[in-house]
Image 1 (cartoon, rainbow, N blue to C red):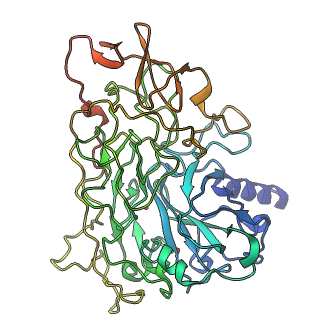
Image 2 (image 1 turned 30 degrees about the vertical axis):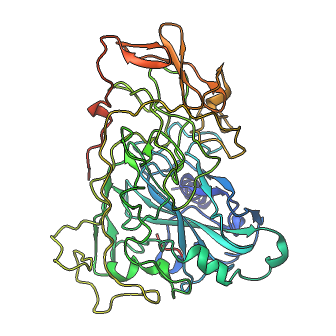
Amino acid sequence: MFSQATLLLALASSAAAHMIMEYPVPYGKATLNSSPLAPGDYPCKQRTGVYDVTEMNQWNAGETKTISFIGSAVHGGGSCQFSLTTDPKPSESSQWKVIQSVIGGCPSNVTGNITPANPDGHGAATFPVQMPKDIPDGQYTFAWTWLNKVGNREFYMNCAPVQVGNGASKASKASTKSVFAALSSLPDMFVANVPDTSCSTAEGEDFAYPNPGKNVITSAEATPGSKISGAGCSTMTKMGAGKGQLGSPQPGASKPSPSSAPGYGAPAASKAPAYGAPVASSTPVYGAPVASSSPAPTAPSASTAPTYGAPPANSPPAYAAPPANSPPASNGPTYDGAPPASSEPTYDDAPPASSEPTYDGAPPASGGIFAPGAAPAAPAAPAPATPSTPAAEPNAPAPKPSSAPQQPQQPDNSSSTPSAPAGNADCTPCQTEGSVVCMGGNMFGLCNHGCAVPQALARGMSCSAGAVVASTRRSLKFPRGHLHRRHGASHFI
């Protein structure tokens, strides 16, 4: 028989294996465990000392911070949201507004869990998140919510105190007309699996949120899906709206319009930004180019930080297409894959003709909790951009070096500390941002803030006069291997 001490140690090790938000520093860090939320834990993993301020996190308007985690049980990744509420001690009445969604690869895109486990638990991906530029000074609560992909249907939620601007408003909630103007148009946080017997997401899918907002990242390795089932879904999925003090956008109001919707795979001929080719876009892109046997299709951003709402000013830059067998550079998400055909939720049974979402189980007679003026209609699906051949290389002058954080880098699991970004490891100086730099007969690089990192050319490719071309002068197209197949997802304000 195991002794009581052995049993307690085993339970502690099991809990530590799950994921906890490391930065921003969460409320009640000393009492926070990594288990998923039970129904009575919502919001913020309720417990004694749940809102003890271990450290006040300074995060100013328009500033980008890197969200990091500790642990190894990533359950095959999944989807997550980063949200804000104006309440310093959130309750079930609090309304959570989503400032960024990640579909697939959160907090890592490994098949199961991170193995071998990093000695200090820093094997998961990190994510840059920007505070809304127009948010007023004051104290807010930030939340990370996660719908895991593999294993039991679970919902994770960690919360952290955040101070925007100076400390004058630190002791009170930030509730002004300017807060309403900054946050009311953002979507409400999505909640499910609390418990899964009432409303459950489908295992094996990276949940595609019905309304992820304008700032959304889809991993190139994601298997998006929106299946939910259960009699409680019509109410549970709207828990993030709370009492709706800030108001909720009309269905589809926060989705990218056809002119600004992100494209997937190859850059389109329109002004739409393409994942894998970061441009002046509202969507940050994960991953930094590293020296390998296969080129990684990344290009520098033309802005210092992601923006909200407006489409990019210029068409996306052209860059070399990767070979069909190009492997991912890390466990973190990449963004050159195809998007889901639709972000609308799907169900085991065909939905009715009306715009009200339906579920496998019979929903209650009431429509759940709605913010003032919000309608329970399902959001319309955005039309994905049509892939086309890469556009011509831009001749715009190189922007000044940016002070914004570098793109997130998957840490090396073999080290006890997170690895540094690979962008400055070995580079060739360059001037034109986003341009192709030829390095001998079998190497090339993309100009990223005055530095081009050497990358090996794919077989049959050559670099000449600032362009990567096929040796047989075939037109460059993105291989079908990089286009996603559709396979088969929290509650905050």
